[in-house]
Structure formats: C-alpha cells, structure tokens
Length: 290
Image (cartoon, rainbow, N blue to C red):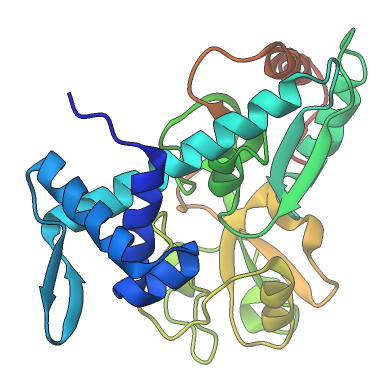
C-alpha cells in the first residue's frame, strides 16, 4: 500500500489546476525546483506518469485526471475532519443544517419547531444556500446535515433518512395562457414558444444544452420567470420563494421528488440523531408540504 501525504496531494492539485509549474509554485509559496522534484517523486512512487510535459506546456494524463478527482476529495475530507473535530470540543454546540433557500420551507419551519422539543438539543443553525450547494457544504464540514432531494441532488458519500415524497409543479409567469390550467403534462411545457425551460446544474456541476437560461441562484430564477423569460419544474413544496407574478400548476407525469435529511456517511452523531428523532415526529403532524 502506498501512503500519500496531504502535502504532495496539495502540490499535485496546484499543478493540475494551473497546468504550469511556475504558476503552481507561486500559488503554493514555494520555489519551482522543489515542486518539480516533489511531482517527479510522486510519479515514481505511484509508478505512473501524471503529466505530459513538452515545449507547449503541461497536460494531465488519464492517470493524472483520476488522481485530481481523488485528491480533491481526499483534501476536502481531511479539511472537513479537522473542522468537525474542532467544533466537537464545544459541548452542546448547535448542529449546522444546510438547506436550499426557498426549498421545503414549511418542512424546515416545522422541523425547527420539533427540534425545540428535543431534550438537550440546541436549536439548529440554518445555513441557507443556492442551487446544488448542499453536498459541498457537507463535504467541506461547513454543515453537519442537509435537507436534500432524491433523485436530483448529489448524495454520493452520504447517509440519509427519507422524510416525504411529493409531486412537482411548473412555475409560470402569471399572465401566460398555461397558467390558467388546473394541471399540465411534461409534453405541454416541453417546447412552449418564447418560454424555454430553465436549465439546472447536473450533479457534476455542468449544464445540459438548451435555449433556457442557466440557473445559479433562486433570486435570478424568480425574476426570470416573472419577466416571462423561462419556466421551471420543481417540487410542490419549494414554492416559498414565489412572487405574485408566478403561478404554480401541477405537472401530473413529472417524476416524484423525495426530501431527505443527509449527513456524512457513518453512524449519526448524537446531534444528528436528535434531528432525526425530531423529523420522525413530523409524520404524525399536519401536512408539512403546505
């Protein structure tokens, strides 16, 4: 087994991202010769070539691309472990719960109320984020748990507890002809003239091709819909951010979405266990999706 040091992984990632030894050395605050030696030593230890070097510059090999993906994840995990360890020294500290702004608002509100009834549990600190950011917050250690959605969010490396499953709605400009319908099908909204479907990021962060705008923030999305520039399909409970210029119409054949509480893989901490206990109590309460 080959043990890799975090230092050499940081060196490798810097060169892989810059594709230039001089710029990478400057970023790291070291001289270029020891950086070059460290990368060469890493290649010898692994028995693979990580970079193709020629007069035109530096490029990653297939093996280098694999290590870049793994090294980023490893460094992020080490950083998260240090952050969580430091926070653990504070007895009774508040659990940090990440949630996409505007998503599952009623559930989040009821969950916080339920947490107040858990003996010995400090009120969770809510960390609101933008589209698709929950996974990064969990992996970096900035959040302890997150409200996420299956199958649209990246749950790789996380354990999770399902909370509820719901249908989806299309959000339209209030004045659009389709806004007066009681329900719609996906084919009805697939190619609406002048009103393309908003493009959400995939799990890998890339965007699908299409005429609709790339969505980065909820406020951007809300205004684009109000201006009649796009439409979108979202879980029915995500409508807390809707403006008076919006109308939500059920899409009867859209895939169902399950909201979950996710946390880094492994036995849940006492704080997460308390959060899960509070969530279970909601199943006997009134509808949390309203």
